[in-house]
Image (tube, rainbow, N blue to C red):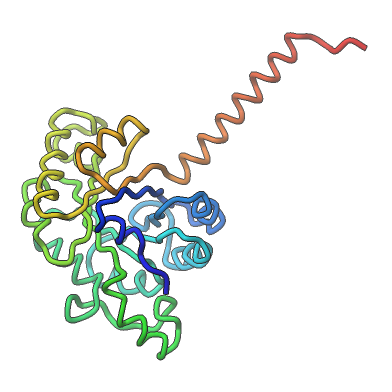
Length: 266
């Protein structure tokens, strides 16, 4: 059973970099996993990824070093059990805005006595009873438990959230946070920046690592200075679309230049 080196890096104060999977395509996930990213988040909150796709994606990237994480649709046990049985090494629960939400996240992610995760027999457990016993011994230690703070209520209750035992990481959602503050489409608004800084400072005091999406090198450098360690640097669809657009532009420029130069002399 491979270690969760993302969790280890975060605990050691190191930086980690990863991407988001929104397409139900194991091949795309495998290509991204082979790029050298630290983690991949399989998103079941948004997009068209169902539980069968989650398991197929996990199987496709199993031979790589990437740490697989799944963003759930909610913190309830009904969302968590089946997903966790497919074998991710971490979960992200969206819209955590209170101590109760944070406690529900931990409860859903961990086996008793720390939580209430049900004991199944799926891919995570090696499909067999003997392997399950080995998994049960280490599962809670391997699991990266992430709460996503993306609403103004979560900012108001951030001290309670970060003091919840079992939380390994707080992940910021600037777009939804901005919307909840009345600044939809303005995640860079100064008031949103102040809210993010409040979360960062509370997490630092509680010694809980923090993560955030970044838009590029300059944004990432600023967030590192703020104390962030876990960086969402890109989405599968954006990578694909961007590469296609760049390829098309290069082809168009080359084609136009060739036409302007005229036909080759015989």
